[in-house]
Image 1: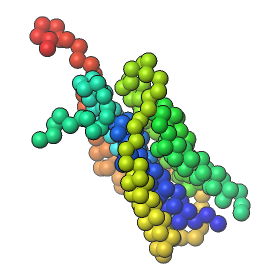
Image 2: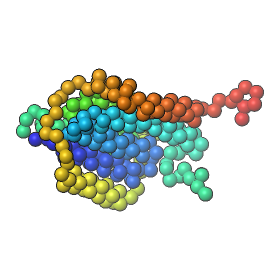
Image 3: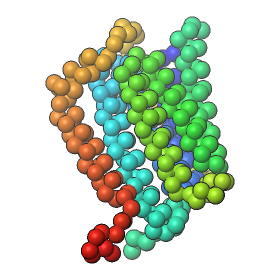
Image 4: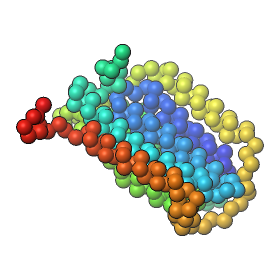
Length: 101
Length: 171
């Protein structure tokens, strides 16, 4: 019988995949993909706890708000990435250090 | 194993395979298209969790919006003749260790914690309830997040537009 820990396990593996992408990739768009995977894992946890707990809908509402925030985040992040590409002709995250003090 | 369990394992496998290829593939376009698999898998898991509205919102927002934006990002930031679109990978060993550590920790927590769960909840449509909750109890977060979205999108449009020379005092 599939229960709460099964969903949490899937979510943990998705989150770990996102962490791996963020640690190992240097392309800014690939980094964003990792961040999206982590956000999805967190939302999956919200929905799972919402399903298996008494107060049925709060988790889903939190996940909705989180999806909206993720959409805003990815729009701003891609705008920044495009601007970086326009200015330094690369989106290697290690080479975008112009603002470093 | 009943049909629900079978569906869970199939959908979870789809999501995890998609996520793994996304993370491991060196070609960014492959990574983006496998992210589609991962997002659809998560939407399927939402449906299994009786979160029908959330599943549809996931398909619309992630698959229809965020993934398309990411593909735009991949394609606009590489020269069009650059067919390889490779992404270098650094510190694979360290990254693998960190990711495995995170996964082991979270899975141990998931299985060893005595969660206070309810055994069985009725599966019923959630859309009306979510709408009512957003308009009553959660009206402030709802308005706030819509304001955030508006400001973020205006900011993104402002940051991302190409600098056309203005008439008169163009830079």
